[in-house]
Image (cartoon, rainbow, N blue to C red; front, side, top):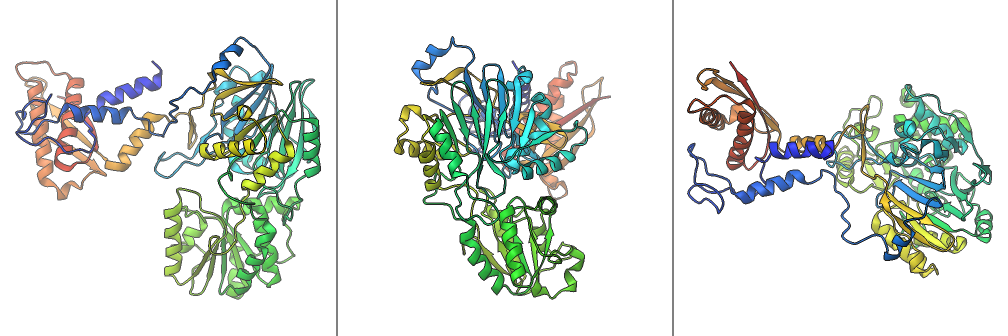
Length: 638
């Protein structure tokens, strides 16, 4: 049994007193399998409730994928004896949004693509900062990792690099100029890591990784400049990774996608196309950044008071639009939010953001200009508690206070799970007299991911032999796969894989390995990487739901009697001063448990007494309150 399973088993045994929320047994009506009311006068709890409690404790904290059908085809077993060849492994990014990282392996050489984080959903993983890819597959293959390529500078593609760096060997790293600068800035935050050298590449460049593998990078459009397609050429064939992408023929702060380069790849032949699936359930084409310029111009031109634009710090193209249009209307621009200010300075230095001299002002200068001549570009459009926009809404910002007729624009879509926080933020701003506009009221947000027609166009351009949807929820991947079938890819050549699946390819076939790479979540909490598992997360969830009580009992070594009155500490359960009757009942129950356990000259067994107190007090509290606090017993023998 693994250490994790041992811990779960121990915790399950220690907490069987925490039944599911169901009707407790009534006095005098014991259920089948239970005894009559015990000597303390409390009704027993049925065996069914106990079993439900145990099942609850065995359930994983984070929802796990359950596959009830065999993912391997019957013919896959015929290939099990083969060694080497071309393999594709994703350590994250399949069946989820974020945590993007994959490996292309040919014989004993591996090329990695990206290393991104996923941000935990509210309430799912309390206290967790990031979820990162599981790279345990590379533990005994570090010397095989020859190169690592980064597609673009968003955190869901580069954010995990500091956390996996020591586990992937020492590959040569490659990135476009902006991506390289953003990675370098992130790595500066981890002073304990050795310096990282990143080779700068330009779109259209070819990199020779080894005698067997070469990589070509091509320009593609996204919501950030310098997004790259990665085409890995092996002796078996070319594997093309699209990155996050859309086709934008009229980009604002970038060049259009390299269509000629993509067509050339297609003529040479692409064995496998791995394509971004995020927009596979959205009809039509994604909006061009140029399409929303007029709407932004209308909003900025008609804005009253201070204009506050909430957006992601990574939407560099959007930030450029806001700067340019603000200049047209004679507005000064101020930036706030750590990531916003960092990205703006990096992009200004590299020439990816352009503004006139004197356009940008500091926070200390905003009162030097008429309010209606200031545009503030800030983070926090997702309703994050400590982000700039929430601090402004709550009146906690040092320099910006909302006044009547100020204009607030949410220029980014709402990430699923953040709806309540964003709604609260909007309401708070409206209560203070501001005017609020979001991307659904006017087209002021163009996503960075292609919709159906963009994805279809990529398949039509590349004409791959095999097709593998990546980067998206499972339903998005399935829809994307169906789209490929409509464009002429045989159903048998569409590969729907999971994180950890090892996909083999030759020039005519693909198959799943019987083994899988580890794919469990790896959690980052503060400085800890991977040291938080289901047991700790389960404790955190319980504490957030029903709190805990600590029961401290002194037991006379000679007589086995309780000395004094047991001390009870409650946090997050009930306020004891308002529940004195419950407090007295708990103390009475503890006295009964201890004295019954030490009656008839029995030796005092601390472990047995603590288990009995934990179990019986837990059940007793559930009967009285229908709450399930964590019970922490302390028995001191004197």
